[in-house]
Length: 139
Image 1 (tube, rainbow, N blue to C red):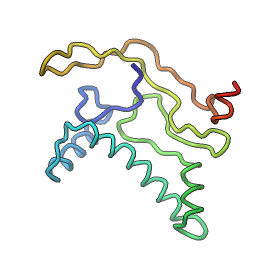
Image 2: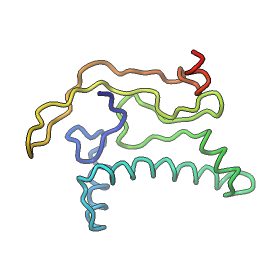
Image 3: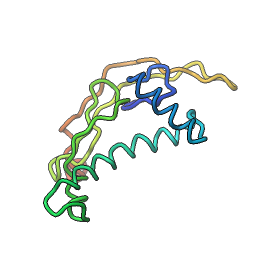
């Protein structure tokens, strides 16, 4: 499998401090810190906040046009991103925010015992290479 970010409960979480902060905050809200969908919400929420921050400082402030522009032109880095993976968009030139990932194998899961991720290859990095949908389908 390809992973481009970790979640707080992963044994190899890339930022132990942020993982602890997220786990504590989720638990304090009465939610299950082991729920992968909550972790996924934090992940995507990070980028929504980045887009809103960027839009808020543009001429005209927070409006639909600036939010659209900001979503197509941001650079940000989720604290639990895999090493070597960047998150950015560059308008019509490169619309894909994540173009890299680390190859892993998931092993050891059985019954109620969770498995673990084990690196099983090199970082696959297409940063800047995918560009946009037309580039993908027209090759």
